[in-house]
Amino acid sequence: MLHGPCLWPATGVTRWRLGARAFVLRKPGTGDILRESRVGQTCTSLLTMILPSLAILAGLALLVWSADRFVDGASATATHFSVPPLLVGMVIVGFGTSAPELVVSTNAALQGNPGLALGNGWGSNIANIALILGVTALVNPITVHSLILRKELPILMAVTLLTGYLAWDQALLRTDGAILLTVFAVLMTWSVVTGLRSGPDALGDETATELQAHAMPIGKALMWLALGLVVLILSSRLLVWGAVSVAQSLGVSDLVIGLTVVAVGTSLPELASCVAAARKGEHDLALGNVLGSNLFNTLAVVGVAAAISPTQVPAEAIHRDLLVMGGLTAALFVMGWGWRGRMGRINRFEASVLLLVYVGYTVVLLRSLAQPA
Image 1 (cartoon, rainbow, N blue to C red):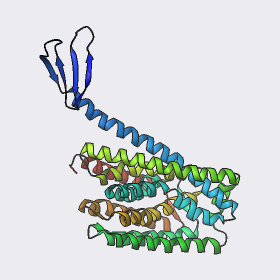
Image 2: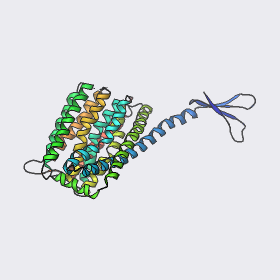
Image 3: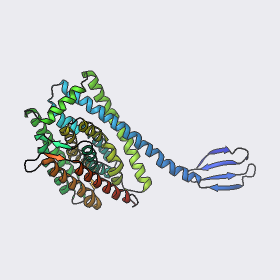
Image 4: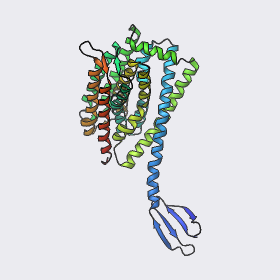
């Protein structure tokens, strides 16, 4: 397919670009072919990587910004309707920071890329525990005071085991998605009832402090809520397109891209909120963000994706990613629960171990990039 001629300076040679294949140089007047080049193919290959990579960067930046605005707007709106701070911390903040994962995975499933959705959900859980809590505890060791969070730790462990059981046959069907979403609905109901009935709690106190520091009029809160949601949806579509295009160009599976670039990118809101909370000494709020996010990812993000587009779960996802996620969840349970009268705590040594685990896991994933999809 000809894209048109142009004249090379000081040569009088006409250059024709033939599709994405080659450049053909013809001598004026005779039509004789002087030289044929494969530069066109190289340039096209570069473009197929550059544009999707820019889309990923732009999508992630907009995703992080919009998620922050969405959570701020939702939290302020809930405060105006007299929602208890503990409930805001458990549901809106904890689950709201997973809005990027939900929107990205939903779009990926709708566009026929369930592997990207699964990788995003599981990869975000791994990043939340190993990377985000690791970095946060290095900044300021985390001590668990909240009784609510101690109740959520075994729930997260049970939910992770349920996911492993459903995925062990290497398939997540619509019935599996329905089971996960049903458990999520029950858990949401429990969270609301607990938030309304509970007395003073460390998580509620820390959330109330944050809400007072970021108070805003109801009109502004609703504006940020709506704008954040719209930009979340649009930026997620941009991110999914870029991620799928890069995966196709590199010849790797959507699952690996979801576990790496997309998972880390959609977890950035949790990283920002956890580090900020740790620097202020709000340990329970930092841990609550991760627990709420991981519960949401495991049940709602993966559940919605499976309900929309049933997916085959590769064997390596079971033996590598699911086991890493389960092992990290078990480690978090042991560290956060506390034993023999000691409060749950993640110290700097444990944080360093978590980060080393994440580095090792990422190296394994990067090596798999060399394997064809």
